[in-house]
Image 1 (cartoon, helix red, strand yellow):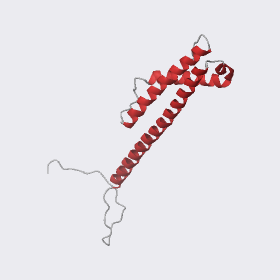
Image 2 (image 1 turned 180 degrees about the horizontal axis):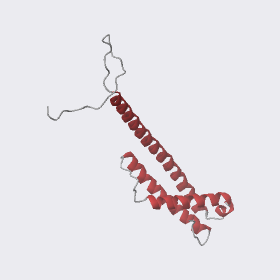
Image 3 (image 1 turned 45 degrees about the vertical axis):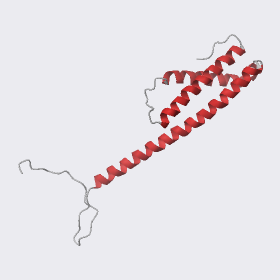
Image 4 (image 1 turned 90 degrees about the vertical axis):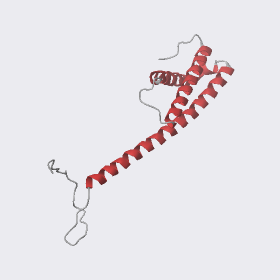
Length: 147
């Protein structure tokens, strides 16, 4: 989805609004990541995806046609550049938060896998000379209900 604008200044104003809203959504998501309260059913997911798509298309188009940006009001260009710089720093912080969450999750999964492997190996049996053989595997336990 692209921006429907009357002129280049209107387009820049709308792109500023898109960038500001994306910044708000990403900041909220960073806070949720840090609080470990982000879930896949985020109510802002669709809005964020649509805005990100619009942002990408508009920024790509502006990069291809820089003359349009030069024709825009100087103050609007300045505001847009400031908002884009802020948004880029928010994206960098978001990336750090996602990386940290991924590392925590991977660490938990690895620890659980080690615990399961340790439990699966079960107790070690003793060999003929009183040393553990390390070959005994865990097995099911039969229980006599009458005993």
